[in-house]
Length: 148
Image 1: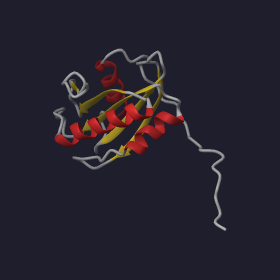
Image 2: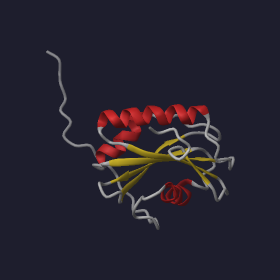
Image 3: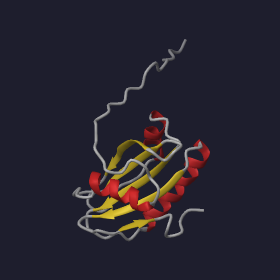
């Protein structure tokens, strides 16, 4: 007979973070959180911002850490943060250590995959924002037209 294990608890360790943005009402708000959290990282980092039904920030999670010019994105890790925090929606952000905010084809493809996964899980992705090291600007993939 095969042994089956029951998962009784999934532990999430929380660290208190301070951010000036409490509600997400625009891509600018996502960019501000990303700049505060990962804007000065020396490698690409993918950030998941979990939101409740009122678009209040309820959690911020560094889902992936890559290298200086790439960071693969896994839907499992992105939506794990959302599910563990009972998020109604999420915003994704990542940084470009080079300072450029231009999206790559890999960024576009990952965004489309995340949008599809969010639709299936009923946790919509409201934006994917790219910030660059020492760059005051940002790039919203929603504003750029990559969302439906």
